[in-house]
Amino acid sequence: MVQTQMPMSESQILQTLMNWRSRVSAAVWIVVRDAHAAEDIFQNVALKALTKDVTFDNDASLLSWAFITARREGLDWLHRHRREVVSLRAELLEILERDWQSPSHTSDESRLGALETCLEATPEDSRRLLKLRYFDGLACQEVATKLGINLDTIYKRLSRLHESLRQCIEGKLATAKPPGVAAQ
Picture: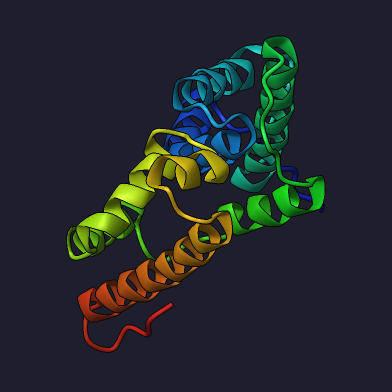
C-alpha cells in the first residue's frame, strides 16, 4: 500500500518559512542589494505560500519553491526599479541557494555573534573600509576615490579582510562548540 503524504498546514508552512527567514532574505538581498526590499519580498513569498493555490508535502518542497519565488521576485523588483546593480550569475545564485537550503549545525545567531566579536577586534581603518563598502553601499571605485587609494589596493584589502573575518568566525564557532561536537 502506497502511503501519500499530507500537505503541510498553514501553521507548518509559516513555521518553516520563519525558521528559514534569514536565509531566504539573504538570498533576496544578494539579488536586490536592498535590505528593506529583501524583507518586503520575503513577506510577499510567505503570503503567496499561504494564499496561492499551491500545496507543499514537506519542508524541502516548500523551501525550494520559496527560494525560486524569492529570486524571481527579486529580479522583478530590479526590473521595476531599473537599478544598476551588479548581480551574480544565475549559476552562482543557484549554488548559494543550495548552500542556504542545506541544514546548518550553527545557528545564524551564533554566526552573527562571532561576526560582531571579530569586527570589534578589526582595526579601525579596516572597519571603515567595510562600512563604506557594505553598509554605505559604495562601489569599490567610490571607496577607492573616497579613501584616496588605488582600486586594486581596495580589492586586495577587502579580500584579506574577508579571509581574516572568515578565519576569525570559524575559530570563534569552533571554540564555542560543546565538547565532542565536530567543527563545521
